[in-house]
Length: 382
Ligand SMILES: Cc1ncc(COP(=O)(O)O)c(C=O)c1O
Image (cartoon, rainbow, N blue to C red; front, side, top):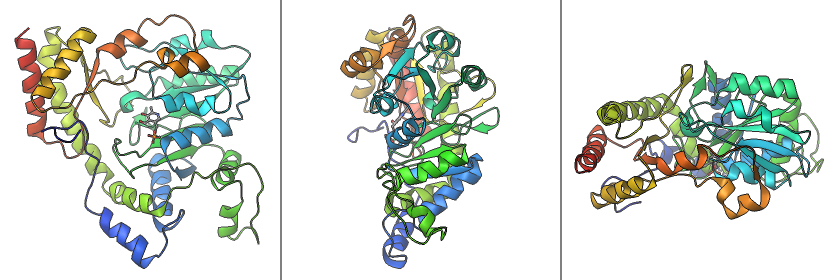
């Protein structure tokens, strides 16, 4: 992406990262997991989201893997999710030999269509995985009501939803498990990393063991037991202190990052509104009660041909704009492991029209105006 005058993404760097890294390496002499900075990020996230338990993980993918494990999904169980998502959402359950069952999305938010979920439930359904696309919440009241009535668990893939909320509740805290990503493409980053948010205390204990190679080492470090041992199946989902040190600096200025991104998002929206009003493009929708985090700004073009031409035009002008997910049910692994329930009315059609514009913390107001100018020129010439 570098080489563009305005790249699609630049990972956030706010200035305090190097001091934190230096402290971890030279002062604390602690660079494996669960040191000062990991604990700082954990308690920051717990306070900020209201989640009773947050564990930093090695990626958003790993947070999802942990969630799938903690749901006790068995081979052949079904998990309802959208096909318009990142492959990790499905991978986490495929690893457990469960079957992702896709239902269509809503064209306004690109999120799972909550009205299509109930019809996809069978006696093998174990969970619903709600993906909050672009940091805009799914219709969680409806989803939680369906889950309650059918005794299903709810996993929120809030990889893109840090600092966003639904009717005042932080994304990731509404279902049984929430999964965040701190990959370098996200609003707050640690290079590679993530977090799992857990609503139930028993599941939290199980998660601690799962994350620490199946040992009760965390209880040992808290002085709750005399020696630690291998108590259950586990893996290594604990990130290094170096990654947490980088993230801690960004959480310290999380509101500033959020406000800056929202200002750029609102500027895109206002500058492009005349084109939307003229029926040339569509702009994103944020339903009432959803507070988004400006993770992404996208537009929708007439069709895939127009989108590809616009990508080419922006590229000629030094601007990187990119499309997003190819629906999972059309991918080779999707055909092998998953099935689509009902009709694909919007998933493919809307994904082909969607184009993401540059969005990152260092993006300037002038950059946004330049991108919008070029888009206006493109449509003027047609
Ligand atoms: C919706 C969604 N789920 C999961 C992930 C995986 O997160 P990570 O890259 O941290 O593993 C991503 C990352 O892009 C994502 O967008």
